[in-house]
Length: 214
Image 1 (cartoon, rainbow, N blue to C red):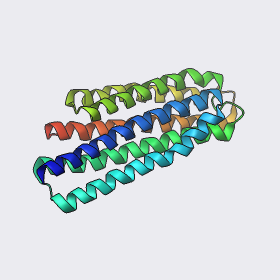
Image 2 (cartoon, one colour; image 1 turned 45 degrees about the vertical axis):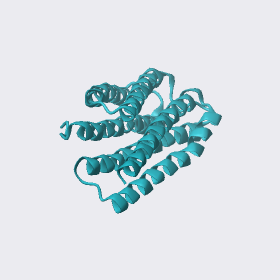
Image 3 (cartoon, rainbow, N blue to C red; image 1 turned 180 degrees about the vertical axis):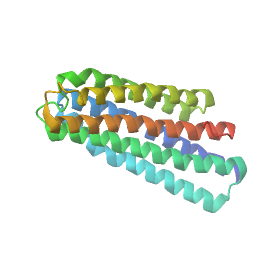
Image 4 (cartoon, helix red, strand yellow; image 1 turned 135 degrees about the horizontal axis):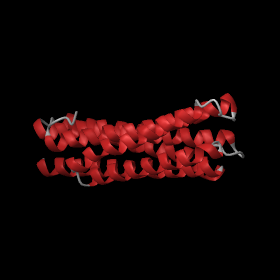
């Protein structure tokens, strides 16, 4: 029974890594669609969101089965519950990439981001990708120290988010209200994407140490 339990946990862990890799690719492709008005990339992100949802459903099913069959306690219970929390954060990251892609598609064939905002969104996308890569690594090989680094990465994203709003609210903003609203929503999508990765990292930190990092 113990060997079976470990095998099931390994399957859950691999599903989480697969999810993390998928949401990283999703935001990469959504960003390309956003910045280059790439309709094909946007449609691919939207189509593949169902795959991320399917992975989430598989994690839920596996966890429910483990709880019912194995009745884990102590560290084992913490591992199983952590997997469920992490999967929920990853699923939401996939949804946020989907939102970015849909914004790009709605504005097609025009770019959804004007020239003045491109540098900020390029930087936000780079931070998002770095964070997604890090959470993938942390899930592949749980490491409390690397998980804690996500907090500092998120500070960079938060600053970029503030810079974005400074630009949008400047009296010299030339693109009107609709474009400003799109910019604000897009900034929120990237900022929340990073937040969910940080949440996932906190759960991993708790799994490894037994202590909450906040």
